[in-house]
Length: 73
Image (cartoon, rainbow, N blue to C red; front, side, top):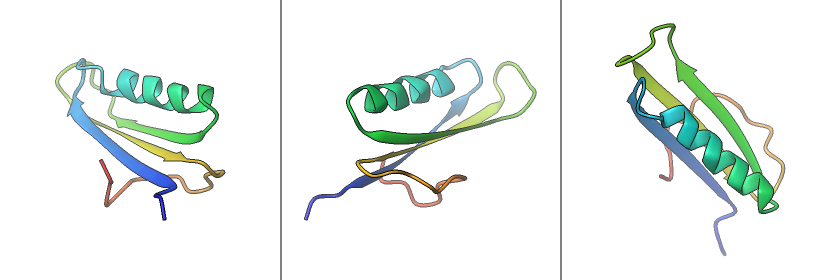
């Protein structure tokens, strides 16, 4: 049986494009006909602050939001 859902967690520092990369991934999934959920997590700092972004990718509708503890990628 093929995996129908992927959980992706991206981490980096502010200014590295982590949130932008997750937006690109999420939009690509939606354009190709899938479903995605995007949750960026960052503070009020501008650069060099810890940043995380969580993207859920699925063929089915996604109802879950929040932090991804055990990502596939």
